[in-house]
Length: 217
Image 1 (tube, rainbow, N blue to C red):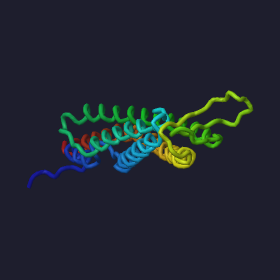
Image 2 (cartoon, one colour):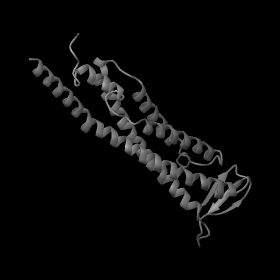
Image 3 (cartoon, helix red, strand yellow):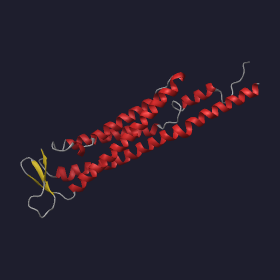
Image 4 (cartoon, helix red, strand yellow):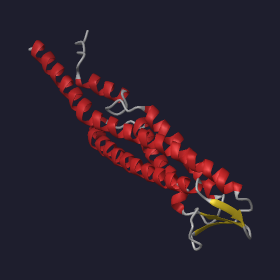
């Protein structure tokens, strides 16, 4: 009979590390949530852009959803792909760092999308709109006769602006707020696994290995 493998042997520690997704317990739920929210934000953003051709890019935050989808794909790739033992530390560290930075960027983008949507939503609540020449012209209530007029082109009915588009803005605020919280949680998990779990696990494996060697001696 061959010698029994200790509980803390390097090989077993490596297998345990592989079972816990490339060295850390990366939550699959966060990546899936990012993907679902990113797709939802992108779809709603393109629906908002179809309401009027004169809408600015900042008012249709499909760009925020695309960035979040890219972050989610990287997280799923990091979760599902297994590396060789001799490449694990270097490549895994680079992917974790890249995922952390992209999640932080997605958090900032989602906050910007919420700010733009909230600003436009607050304006729509005060607009007085009327349909004119295949467009919807809206004004803020003001005593000045030359107050600024906001024109939404290619709109046959102003209810699509004051009703449908306003609802889309509210949905975007909710989706981007939730997505920002998910990205913040992903950043926290990456930081925690990097500075609280990774080195502790390596130290425990090395200590159990050294104890087994001392017992054999």
